[in-house]
Length: 246
Image (tube, rainbow, N blue to C red):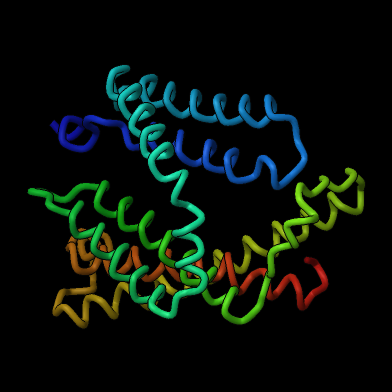
């Protein structure tokens, strides 16, 4: 009964497992120099592994996975031609922060009509909160002139030669970035759940039980993961720049 209510048509894992790699491929090919077949093969393998894992785990049928894959391709095809306009609005419009918050929160409420508690609600809020935080951070970066794009005449960019120094620098960036983001998540999680319980008049003794209330769960997911993604796109790159790790 739980699987029937939690995992249905279409498979959203198949959708995200298709949208993410193919979006990365479409948005980086032509910006960076790498073989077309390499990028396409990597995207297909990523998507295939995610789709097969859902069938293997018994969460979805083959038809549900195929439908999710095709839905995702349809969405990409529809939005591909409008990405530049959306990106320009998000970066340059003074109304963008308000639109971003209203859009992501509004999409969340449309998806949260559940009869009983489900992990899907939290997962959806987490994805939407992450997207909102990244979009707000991108807007702020553009407004403050941070992390400016290279001139179009310099594209496509050549990949730097692989070296021990580059690997060490990349590893240091990874470790430092992960530590900052984990610390941000822990601090925001510790502050958000008790605050949400206090605001909505709910007992905060049992954190697991409190998080099953929609008011607490949505506040927690949106605020915590919105802050984490904002830090990832804006604050952590500033830290790298300050430490000469850009």
